[in-house]
Length: 216
Image (cartoon, rainbow, N blue to C red; front, side):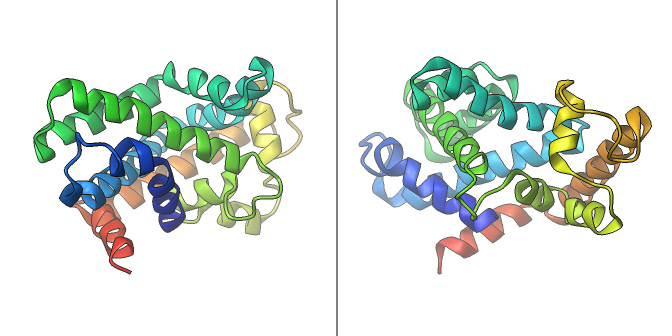
């Protein structure tokens, strides 16, 4: 999933980074890697902090925003730009652009404000598209939590759509262990899985993986 995310960022970065004179060409790959790390770490850190519901709401709500606004891409991005998690990622990435690549504040904010929401909008689209087998919400969560989705599925009784329904109030509580206690147990396990991934990939480990993919 991390390599797929990197390729998605590369596609979004063509105009924002590659063809942007504000970003020196020698930094292009590093900026793309930093953007990938920002998105991957941001999603993982949110789940590790107990924010599984926020991730599911963002991905589930992103599709609704696109449908309800009539203009698919712009509606989705508008919804994401106001999302606190996305705003946090944008701020983090802009800070990295200034500290690591000596970009001024306006340039850094412009790149971050266009690239990060664009990447997430594309990711939301792909995870909600039934014919795109390369991306799925359960696959994304499985990657973030070190395989906890697959573990829950193997134990039986886990259905992601039912979990989404419980968060949004549109599903019944008959699945996923029965009611609120089952839901909280799943959230707890996902949180622990993401925290374990934080420790495993700490100290620059996630960035090392991303840079390894860039060298292929």
